[in-house]
Image (cartoon, rainbow, N blue to C red; front, side):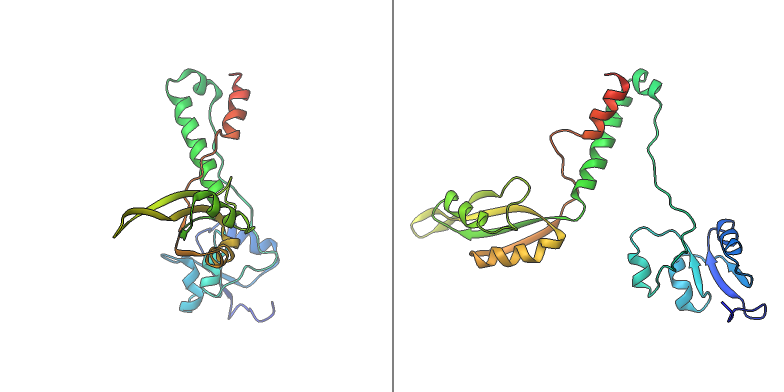
Length: 216
């Protein structure tokens, strides 16, 4: 990178004051000046106080929002968070296994829910079976096991009637708009969409694996 000189060094903002200089030196960059920035490092280039940053990146969304991009070959290291436990403590300390069970349940349920949305809509129909047939005729509306269909009770001049049904399905983000379009096409209205936080399955695979390793 010939444009960087001793008089005009590459300015890098980072909180990794050991890893950053070490990596760039090993990469053969000679004229580099490091600084630390308070707050979000992503704003440093836009503020004119840095030409580049060295920071933690997960999805890369924050980088894109600040008109930054990852430099090819610029990964210092790859890391992940790991849950570590003592086999002895899990077997002997009262209540610890139950707490671990809950942690694993929450982790798995949250990971399963990433990118999933709940879609709720009202649909006019003569009965639940007829509504179900219309929904299942659309490939994006099957949900996890199938749609949940419940009668919607309305007050009319002739009394309480249930000629509408509430439809609840779970769809992945990439099929969200297509699912809304298909619901409208078969008579769905008042479509509500909300992100999912957890999807708890019947049993947690990691919990079964842990019990097996503990000999339980």
